[in-house]
Length: 256
Image 1 (cartoon, one colour):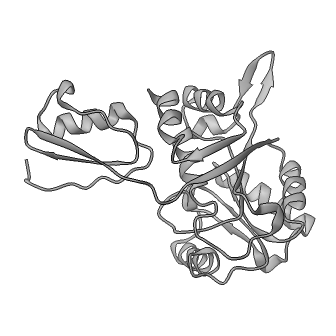
Image 2 (tube, rainbow, N blue to C red):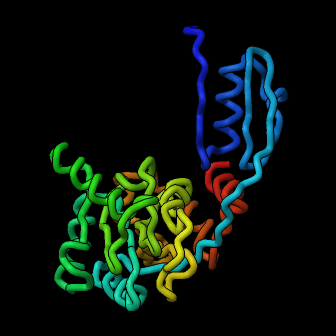
Image 3 (cartoon, rainbow, N blue to C red):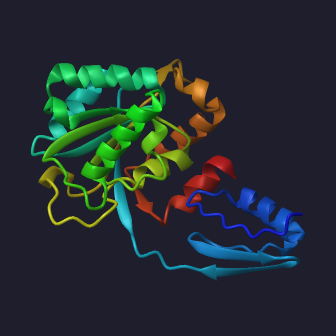
């Protein structure tokens, strides 16, 4: 209607959503939308659609583990993984949980206070901007990384920010968001990473279970239960994720 061009970038777009967008933009039917595998460029003009495969230059294997929800379990897992140093990110789905995990880590004196950072969207704008600048200056592409540090955050570091961590612990979330979070692991080439963290490692918080019924706790306030359940079932028997090779299959398992 307005005659504008649109560029949409996504690493986690379900095929169904892609088809719907192309049908609406180009005025074509579903049969006219060509199939393509991620990663690829799809272009559309009025009545015309084409695709161009893209070779991914970055290929990683992210090791998967599960961890209990209790903040004490997070402290124990990090104490083991950071024994030779390293930079870790913990992504929580709510501000309250991020605060609880931060307090547990601070009480355990796992890292120096100046290298334990709490980052969430409930800060006043000036404080949030200051914290974001601090995080980027340490964990960005050209950041001066501490020998040992932990960032406890909410979804504010999930997208957009160009950050690089050695290891990550994440609350369970929809699989597309977990893949986005995993994109902050070993994001850039670095000469030195601690020996236990030479390979990217993602620890995901395991849901509670009673009588074969899964309990996702407050995460259900943020994300639909059925998406959390399908994401958990898609990942629970995996020992790793190959990126980008497994991206499309995981997205379609949950959203297809």
